[in-house]
Image 1: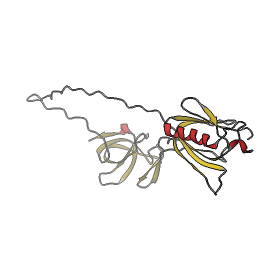
Image 2 (image 1 turned 90 degrees about the vertical axis):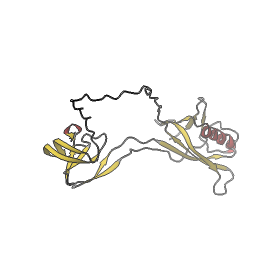
Image 3 (image 1 turned 120 degrees about the vertical axis):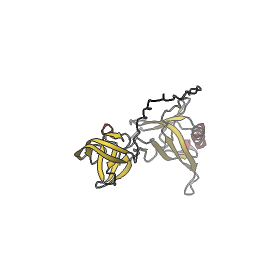
Image 4 (image 1 turned 180 degrees about the vertical axis):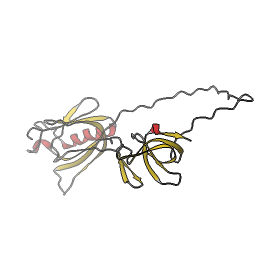
Length: 233
């Protein structure tokens, strides 16, 4: 792709172009999936949230760029060390950098989490270097105010019974189930419908459509049910 350039812009909006294009560029990504084992069904994959993306660049810089004839820039810096100094400054700043690859849709913003350089193969005419940009997702800590006033405990009047707090449902909880059973937490494999059945929760898949896996009190697998289908005993 003729004319393609790799441009780096620092936090002060100053841009320079890498003198040589890397041979390849890959943007890493994925999701944080987890696997649970379900009796009589086997392993079930639960799709998680998207992982932080990253991009790694490996290339070379001529020691004397103006004497090289194979560059991707028409007006390079006189010294290769100047490029290394700029990259090292970005790395030490711990601030976000934007990489733009012209003639493509690649525009990646992140902090330079890794940077190293040197010389390889006994070649004293070129520096080799590697750096990695890692996506920085915005987040902010929220301060929660707590009341310093102590709440007075209510004492039940004589002759009146105090109402019990609502039961909480968790792994190992004994519950009453009224709802349809499913083979997977995503709703796959619909099966029998439980009616006022006393069961026990063996697994919990947070965020799933049918988050509770129930068994008989003796441990026999029944299936996955919705949140509204269970009630603590």
